[in-house]
Amino acid sequence: MPVETSESFRSGFVTLVGRPNAGKSTLVNAIMGKKIAITSNTAQTTRHRFRAVLTREGFQLILVDTPGLHKPHDALGEELNTSALKALEDVDVVAFLVDASKPVGTGDEWVAAQLSRARSKKVLVLSKIDLVDDAELDRQRFAAARLGDWDAVVELSSTTGEHVQDFIDTVVALLPEGPSWFPADMETDQPIDVVVAEFIREKILRSFRDEVPHAIGVRVEEMGYDRKKDLHRIYAVVYVERDSQKGIIIGRQGAAIKQVGTEARLDLEQLLGTRVFLDLSVKVKKNWRRDANQIRRFGYGEGA
Image (cartoon, rainbow, N blue to C red; front, side, top):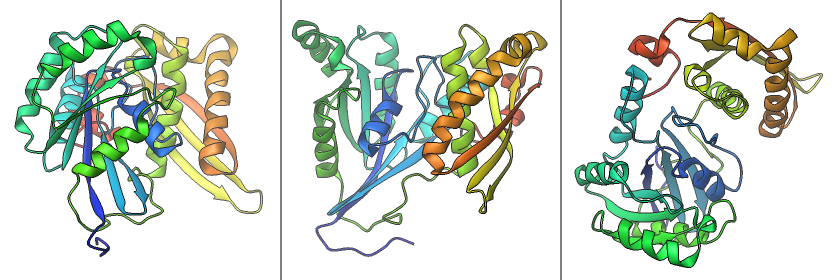
């Protein structure tokens, strides 16, 4: 139930869209001031459409992070595109992120064309401006501006924080007056087991290259809190599609999966505010990315 607020209170939903690795999840984390969404240089890092909620005096901003829009190569890719496009419906603002460090191309043009279905306000966001000089930024600004009709344009760097507050101010000004849709202390609508699984998957994405990261799915099988020891016990399974991938993830004498577990545990202890015992196992689920039912069992995409 929405909470009634003063007449000057603004609230609404803002969907972030763009090509893979345009900086959507990094922007979410910069806005929230903490790690909410996982990030990596691997395409399809974001597989869940989720909401991050920023509540401050005078406004509540609900950010909808989406998978990067791309040409799909399997059922998983199709499901992620469906999820991202669905997020354009019934929102107040769409923020289209364009990576300022890469030339505007046909992929950006295709994403911009999809925005025609959105009846909301549209903000063009040039991200990663810390990676380009002024001349290159001018060229990117001109090329990106021609992709559509924009209610506002913001240039920012989520890494350095430059102009992130400008983005917040710009978007909030475009929101309608309305109630607070979520509790003030709520930061994400993701169930905790999904967040935990994603933190684990991020470490795999950062540790391995080529095809292996795309074939990874993670599911938390069991999670509990021991009050006496102030300890969370987490048992999770990393799924791959082939036996050869299983060997790569485990590594020689289990070294690779142990390193993933160590790195993930450090993040999870910060997230949960307690010590964490993390048990990881690796199993093969052949060709799961081609099976829509399996994709949804992992909670990925629109059908989750």
